[in-house]
Amino acid sequence: MTATQRIAAAVVVAATAAVSLAGCATGTDASKAGTQTPRKGAPAPKHVVRLIGDGSTAYTGPQPHLPRPQRLKPGQKPPQFVVFSWDGAGEDSQKLFSHFRKVSKANHATMTYFLSGVYMLPEERADLYRPPQHSPGRSDIGFNDEQGIADTVQQLRLAWLEGNEIGTHFNGHFCGRNGGVGEWSPAEWRDEIAQAKQFVKTWKTNTGMTKAAPLPFDYDRELIGARTPCLEGQKNFMRAASRLGFRYDTSGVNQQVWPRKRMGLWDLSMQLVPFPGHTYEQLTMDYNFMVNQSGTKTQGDPAKHAYWGEQMRDGLLRGFHRAYNGNRAPLIIGNHFESWNGGTYMRAVDEVVETVCNQPDVRCVSFRQLADWLDAQDPETLSRLRSLDVGETPKQGWASFLSDRPAPAPKGVPGAPTARR
Image 1 (cartoon, rainbow, N blue to C red):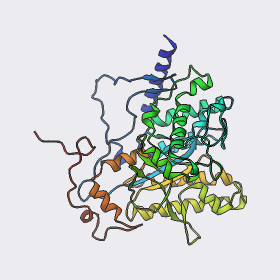
Image 2: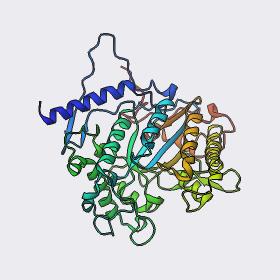
Image 3: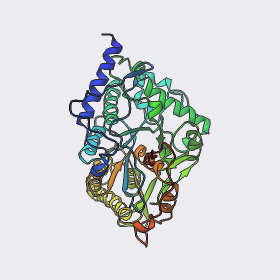
């Protein structure tokens, strides 16, 4: 058996094991959608493995646990979507990537992991990164080592096989003035995106770990969305992304209303939710809660850690209930794998996932799954949903509000009626 054959076999084994162990991706009501139970005695499905480039990635077929989205029926109340997402996803000594994979599986959830490309590049190869408006080898978040890359690859592989999404947080995380991403042109964004993809597609060459199993996806197909560093540079990023086949962006600040498209991309930005103890609202991200609690100190007063975590938890839950009992707008939440203020924000996310993802008619999904569902809906239905204000319930009730029969779905769109013969 050649080295290439051994690699391919390892991917098949990993994929088979992960698929058999992973739980349903979108809750009890949605988990059956798009799945079929093999007939008793039927032959096992064949696994497709096609190595790409140097074998860092591979096409292994459609992603497991990715349910087929269904168009709302006339008068049907929309489900409550909740998206948990992670900026700069990578596995380090804190083991937070693996932790939240387990939390997801235990609570019928999938999430989106925005990978920083430089986390796939070892420090000794840093000069391969040529950031826009900066010297080669520069990165404000550093690079990685061989063990960190191996651990991150393992988590990315398992996360994808369990139905989670792998997006991008780009590379060097440059914020502010003097070359920050807010000053980049669309052409510079395209260059940054190309480099982020390249580091994922060549991690074996750059680390020398040529015998390791590849990532089980084609990153050119997988990558459909992102969040920019510090939520800066959104406009020019979207101009670049709309020409590269991206389907959504989550780099802005929205109210809790139903999303719309901008520049051809779904605007799935994070939202403002109530901030307990304050008259103003707060963005649904751990970093923003921290800044409004301990300022720039990532480890503030230990006596307040528990209280600060409770503030974040309760603020997210108030936002959830406002949507769940109101307009049913998707709730978009962003976080980092960080132990700021004693890890209190990670504990808050744990509690929110456990509380909301197990409630009736709630689907904790990735951005890809949310975009799939939005694309499957009748445009008139989405227009009506967008007419609802924050927390607003249709005065005439959901059945009447969405009672008119939607226009037929375009051919090939999930939920389209089957032609009669």
